[in-house]
Image (cartoon, rainbow, N blue to C red; front, top):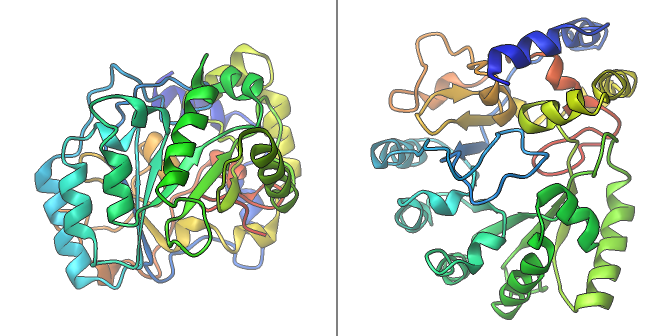
Length: 331
């Protein structure tokens, strides 16, 4: 399903996100201060997870060029950005990642890499465990559940056991342990067409189960709502869950979550340098409305603040219940 087909599918629902938003105090969404630069540096991945909104996989060829990375480094020198959030695909599959991490370290307070973990067992990419450790990169890793069955159901056979092996290696490097400064966070996406449960309760259960069963440590659990995009949207349609899932998102709309959405302080940059308000908008090619600026190569960061944010009906995924962001629940 291409992005136009996804947009058409999402447009055909009972209520629009714009209508719901108009009922809130703010009426619309506008950007605030730029704090987070999120980079989708490739859509190539060694996995094909069922919930992937990017529809990433081994056959994807999109890769951010070194020239685009250099433009981002220039931006970091002139903008007061606190967090660099690197995602994909599997970011490790971009050949410029190691150079970029070393070049960007020291320019921002925090660098995040969103890793699928299992790629760190492959010979070509296992070096990144040391690279991440040396540069104190914050790792955010997908772990849908603390059981093998449910994780493998979403991510593929054998993924859970390999992930546990990699987590143990990361723990040996100090990741996930208090006082080391090496942060290891997990992402929980619900398996099936349901919303995530309470983040604090789930984090407590994940920590107990993973320690009791495997002796592993991690810092935080981020609960993220599965967005009705990409492969997950196709799953909803094929399983006849789409209408019920969208109804649940709409009925769970939380005005308080809408006030604190990540798109307000985040600039998302695609592999080809185009600018978006979030990674989800990128997958629908809903570019950010910065008028004369459309690419990272010429973007003026002082122009970011107080601009209208592009929205669509997929945004119900971020405003349902406790709200959802790349840093977990909002409220």
